[in-house]
Amino acid sequence: MISTKHPRLIVPAVMAVGGTALAIGSWIGAGWGAALGCELVTVIATCGYFALGGRDSDVGALIASKPDERQASIGMRAAALSGMTLVVVALGGVVIATAMGEFAWPFLLFSVVGGASYLVGLIIYRDK
Image (cartoon, rainbow, N blue to C red):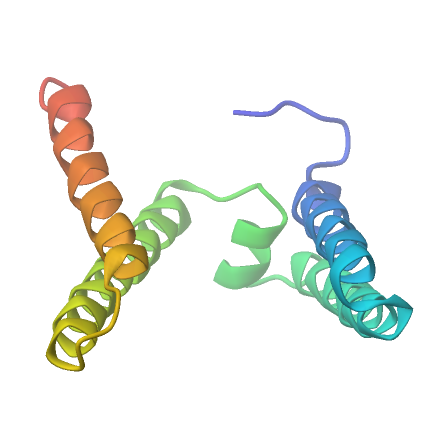
């Protein structure tokens, strides 16, 4: 766990850095107009996450990086649901792309990485 004096700033800071990196990539690939749009969305989302982190709720505690055990369990189950949803969507993409006679490797990549990370997780966490 990351130890910091201001845990509420962790998620907004990661959002700001990631969004700015995306904006730089957009600027290089598509010009300053696309970068400006990405950075605008980044600033709005960062401010939104900061505001949510200050609320006295389960979501606020998770975003502010100060959950109790129940809230951490909710966060872990939500992450598992999103991971399984992405794997199902990737497998659906493999089936659809193959049926259409298109390249399926991007979907296969996500399917294989998702399945492999699940197996690694089983190995790592089996004794804990």
